[in-house]
Length: 369
Ligand code: PLP
Image 1 (tube, rainbow, N blue to C red):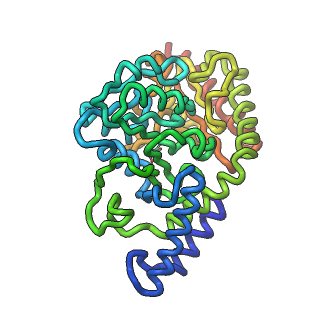
Image 2: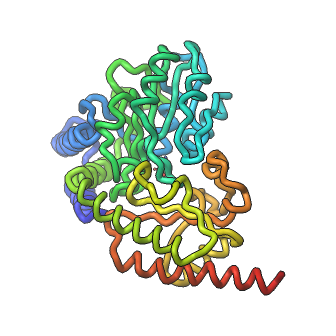
Image 3: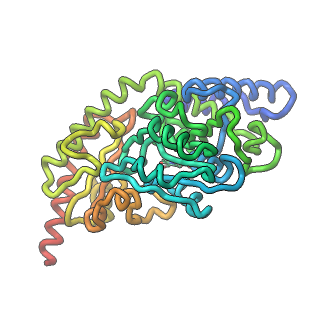
């Protein structure tokens, strides 16, 4: 966690424990903390304070958007690389799924083809959690406004906020999801921006908090902590992207150089300009990532293959499949994520441990043949 976020979490939890829906002094104090956090999140996301709905994380924000966004009736549309928090709700509603190209960027012609005036919601993520690829949201918005005039546009900006100016890049979206733990805040806290006039049906009914859009007593300390993390993230973003982007390039270039049979997902030559700075995603031929992750952990490198799911099981990546990566190659995928605290030492360690792990697995596979 960002130290500023941890400090806010502990301070608010101990000093402002009132219920923000109450009327007495302690409740009003908590209410003020909540209002301040709402202002900070609104500024960070390019919204008005009255457009921010606090949620219990990114999954809840995504589900609220997909199930509740737009005029009732009509169909929903998303891309094939969405996080399961969007993809599964869209599939459960019998929605349409739009393909991406080999770089992992949405096919705008296919998107146009999937739209008509019966579509109520389109969801296109801003940055992908596996590949790190950023989608051209202004172009997406243009297509959506032209072809599906009734639709509201949702973007899952959960993986984007750490790295890109969401206020600018998502300015055309009607609904925007973020999650605090992706930018140095606590887990289980997020927000959905709901632009004025956007139709949205609540999923959680009860006490009517968050302007009737998300009932339930707010996690005031978590929300204040998220706002503290967001404030530092925005203030330092340009420097973080430059510093961490250089670390990521050294890591990706170094691994590609040291390990033969390596493909960098969605990257042609060494052009990573369409990816967020913290994402290094590689596929190694002739290995299985599950075994590699085990060796990496022993060497102090904590990585994942596809997305982290609740069971911890490594499932084949729907993102790589959508990008046309063959299944055998996708089986050897490795997702190394960098963040604001990442250092040269971290990269040095990964540059030592990953090639050793891959070499060991290939040697074992060779011996068995
Ligand atoms: N959307 C994306 C792109 C994500 O990467 C994640 C989490 O990894 C989520 C949604 C879900 O967010 P949360 O874990 O806060 O529910």
